[in-house]
Length: 231
Image (tube, rainbow, N blue to C red):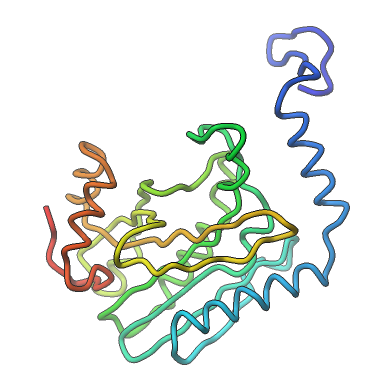
């Protein structure tokens, strides 16, 4: 702890060369320099990017519950195809504990936006609420989301799917090259949450998520929530 001298049963001194101290300083600077203008500029850039990626009838919802930092959800539909994405999640860097990156690049992976694209359903409210709920997960649990992670999604059953998990995917042949804008000179990235079956989730755990994504790349429509299982 930065406020401890010596060692106790629950904490010990952070040495001056500890990498966490520099991160604390950067995040304190962010809090000091955050502004409404900075947020609006980032919000507009993201919404413009989303409209460019997916053409359809779009809606915007506040998802921050009136608390700081501001967060929104962009929802766009075109017949039975839908795109949902967070707007502003990348303002706050995720906790870096457990990240498998070198210190010189780890900051490039801490700011994300989340997206769900699905096909063959008529209503997206349940999945929009689900995505909104996941937006606080890394900070609540002191962890992070990254490519290849999987997470349960009971709401898929509510839209008529037999799937029950999501896999986070950043790069694949079926994932668009969505270059998210920097926030306050910091890199951000987009993670797509792709619906998968429980058996596919087990396959990813027993093998690798990369192998599962390779199988999904061979499917005509990986975003179809009623597609056949690939394992």
